[in-house]
Image (cartoon, rainbow, N blue to C red):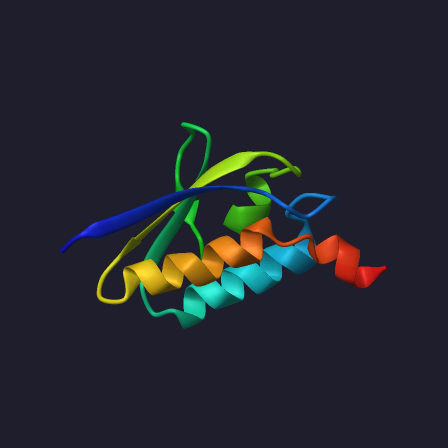
Amino acid sequence: MTTSTRTVRIGSSHGLHARPAKLFAQAAKESGLAVTLAKDAGKAVNASSILGVIALGLEQGDYVTLSADGEGAEAVLDRLAELLTTDHDEDAR
């Protein structure tokens, strides 16, 4: 099985707090693939765990690495990367 990875920069102006973290974790879970998220060279967390994602303490501009295993992993990473690079806080204003 091939692992696909992608490194992206956090776009939300207030970082990955509860609302954007929930959107991201939900999308990761719905993908049906094993997806992990890591900040810089840190320990990877299960991307479908909202608590794991929030625990990374991601701020705007932080770089994270997404990894996914399985069929369709590239498409899943495209969708998740889009969620991470979007400023969800801009929508809330």
